[in-house]
Image (cartoon, rainbow, N blue to C red; front, side, top):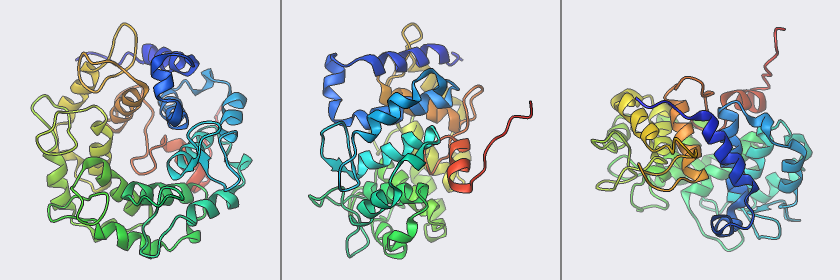
Length: 319
């Protein structure tokens, strides 16, 4: 099996962070804060977070915040719950959450909860189970889950469950691996996993593995490295990860690397990007690949970061 080209991937991520005028960078301008989360978490999982300037990152993140408390995807862009979570996650990586006005952010997120328990992404009102997960994850990281009606939030998520065991973006929506992660992750954080049929859902998820070893997001679709996270994390949270061939999945991820220039693509020989590099490395982390730090399947942050933020456990050197 090909080995993980960790040093190449670190250089790939660092080079992407410096690109401001490339075609790819312009296309991703509106989600720069998401890109920061993907890239910086990749560096942390590979033990190289110290290669970036903390003060510079924190400054850029804070410039994306609005008076409402929410964050835009870039400086001057409108606030949205998606980017608000990325901002909190990035600052959590650096143990800098305390620089935030936590009450202001919590009030922004809580203000997006609807009467039925669902969440809108922003003031324009789009509803999606992604936003339910984001709200719950964000508030949990800030220790402010009491700001929302958790029971209603959980009930809404469960109303999006389908006959095949999966979850959609709204009630009756098609089951999709990305939505399943969001729903299972939110249920895990709120201690509500006992309310789903883990065997039925586990069967749907394990059927996402194709002959090549990779995972897809829906039946009859091509495999994609990003589902190494969405599917695998969900299987781990419901304790059914042993239902897939983990060795074949690891091989698929490693085969999607650009060994010479760094980066991981969606499928072998395709163009690499920061998104798939993060989810490829995160997938390997879930597979306990040597040299990659463990990642929490519900919070999508390194385990040591979650322990520090959620449990207040700090790692001390014995030296």
